[in-house]
Length: 135
Image 1 (cartoon, rainbow, N blue to C red):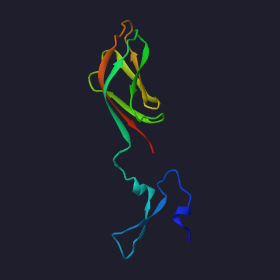
Image 2 (cartoon, helix red, strand yellow):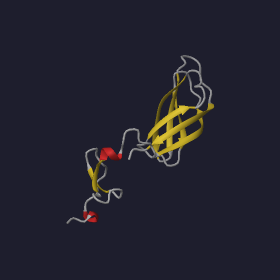
Image 3 (tube, one colour):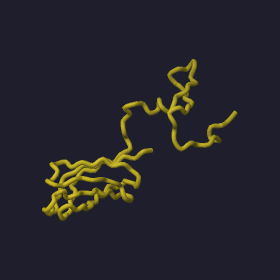
Image 4 (cartoon, rainbow, N blue to C red):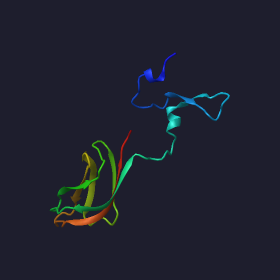
């Protein structure tokens, strides 16, 4: 008989993988199985995330120019996903082009001044970011 500690480990559980379960609620037939899909039901609560709520400084930009602002979010890692929103109205002629974790604890937000001829002066704006790690 194979001993569980001697079996090789897997990196991720696929939807059709089977796992052995000892069902303590059924003492007559305790040996059961569960699929990977059953372990991750639809609508499962996301628990592996970091939430940031503070201000971001949108830098000064000439007309038609892009610039980055940096957020320090302790625990963020390159490859994590980020959802970013301003918590107040977006300043006129400003577009949010992208958000990315560039290094450990560092999230960059790229802004663009969409005005054709007027420069944008720096401003602090309330924001919220959610860093989500896929495991």
